[in-house]
Amino acid sequence: MEKLIKGLRKFQSTYFSTHRELFEQLSLGQKPRVLFITCSDSRIDPNLITNSEIGELFIIRNAGNIIPAYGAANGGEGAAIEYAIHALGIEEIIVCGHSHCGAMKGLLKLDSLREKMPLVYDWLKHAESTRRLVTENYANLEGEELLDITIAENVLTQIENLRTYPVIHSKLRQGHISLTAWVYHIESGAVYAYDALRHEYVSPSSALEALEPEELLPRIQQHSSGWISSEQADRIYQGSRR
Ligand SMILES: [Zn+2]
Image 1 (cartoon, rainbow, N blue to C red):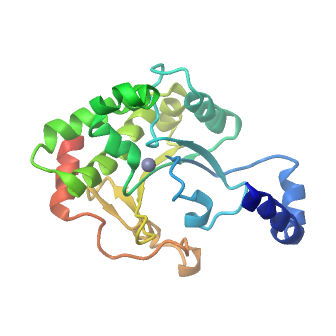
Image 2: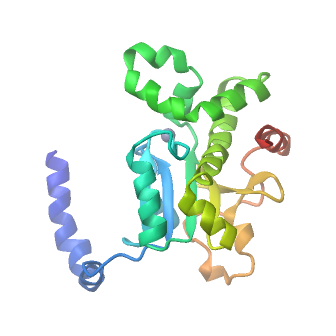
């Protein structure tokens, strides 16, 4: 706690005092461009990895970056989504999973959580589509490889769940909203985006080739190759087909 209180003072005397104008502007209202959905994991900082300023990202965080399908839970996720799309007019949604996700590890051994962490167990049941898809389509995988596939598939499952929200469903019909799947790799700092045409996770910068280099997100490492092998990616695609 002492460290945090010192941090508050340091924030006031350094960052805040040099960005007064920004904070004055923010006090008048928010205009975030992106709804960013990610895991509660302490190793992810959405603003840091995207080099975004305060006020640019509207963020939903929970264990496993899970969005229960519309009507499946009466939690804060649905309210935050509705507010982001309807009240704030956000047109870009990113679901960002991450490597070594504890929630996804838990999902792979769900029954063992029932007694010791019943609330986590109940929450992860909202990712049952991911669990079942992985169990039935990747039975030959285990360990880290299975976890990586689960993380990648879970992000795609949550994108599907987002489509069940009326406020999103309607905007999709109008072509006024984009849904993007990302996986953040903790050890390399790299982010991989799901390319629906190539059916694989690739560097998000490949989608921005038309932009000038300085417009690319500078903190995201540029990788020419995908995060997982093309064989794995193909399995992800096959596994994701409905
Ligand atoms: Zn996680």
